[in-house]
Image 1 (tube, rainbow, N blue to C red):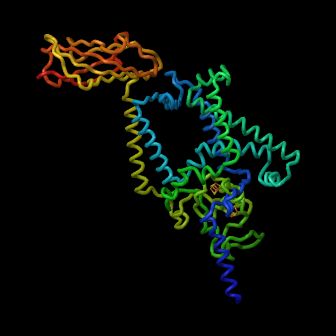
Image 2: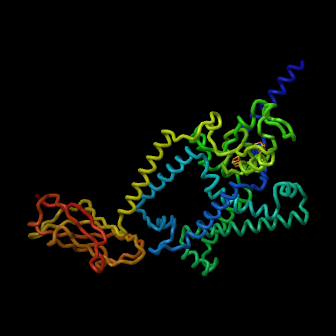
Image 3: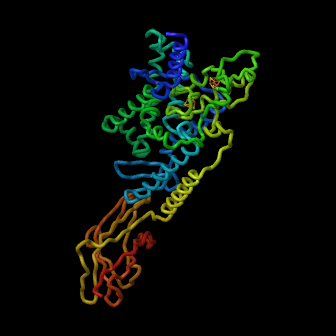
Length: 484
Ligand code: SF4
Ligand code: SF4
């Protein structure tokens, strides 16, 4: 084999190694075995901002199920077994399912829009997985085991007194926090009052709930103590959608390869050297952006599925640039197009279309929310029952459904608003309708109207539900069948 063949082989091998990140996950070896990531503790401007955002969101997450709004409702409640949901203090029942569906679609469109424009900003700044991992569990790990070099040393070290002590302490604190998070999540499901009752009554009296708590504690422990970044790279469907949602105009955490590589490529820093004159890029290949990355990737390889846009590499590189007296921002928030062309961010037609859809959805969900009553009544004809003529009167039979979405119990009676000589008689169901808070009640009524007051074979009739003081709670327009 001659020299040129050897050189070609070396180049091919080098390019294969450089491109390896495209066909593999950094946190796994070729056999699929986990490669543990030991990210260096981040510091810098974005880390400070992100920490503040994380603490505010964490405080909200912990406090929200325990705070009661003036209407007596918590801010959030997702009682799936009972089909009872409270969102920003507004109660939703199964009858409001369409509102929840619109709300969920709006949220999805919102996330899609944000991803198209701002990439994975949600992952890096707002996602609970990132917040708990980077701002709670990772911080505890740094506190107990130290920064990256110390953690790597501890991992390699034998199970001596130091390792046993540190690991036991870490696992205990992780377990306690996981148990705490499981309790907070339970409060979101059953409500804070029910949670306090469970605590008072003790686990022995609520064994099934307690077992559920332990299962969720184990799940959170598994995710944050062991599974970690794999949630983002292997499990999260949102991460998988990135390839479809992100384009060259999307703002992402990006490495300025033009500046970083220049004409002669990246190269180690040498004091007093004129890098520009030598064609060397501003990247000094210090790998600080790599060691700080919680998903273990090298941002200099371009946009990758694993990048959660956490900004840790921006801070790490800025610190390096500051030390070597070069402008910050070699890694920064920018679109691929910004970096390739130097053009500024532009609002595209696709972004405008998404924004309009989003605004339309937010307006309609608000219109539905503010136009709905706390008490809802419906009167539907009982199938197979036609009108009946009784002397000078005609009667129709309806099934009524009453929803009480307030926080109090109500005494309710029905009246006919459109025909003052009409009357309503309860056929099936209690005569005195007492509707407890958050409940639904059904029954059957007979509506009787004098023949002379009817002018159509499908007479429009308005029936109302009023409280014990006669205050109107809700009205329902239905049709009344008659022989005309
Ligand atoms: S931190 Fe900056 S200078 Fe260092 S390797 Fe990363 S991009 Fe290059
Ligand atoms: S590449 Fe940078 S922004 Fe992306 S996950 Fe790693 S450190 Fe965070």
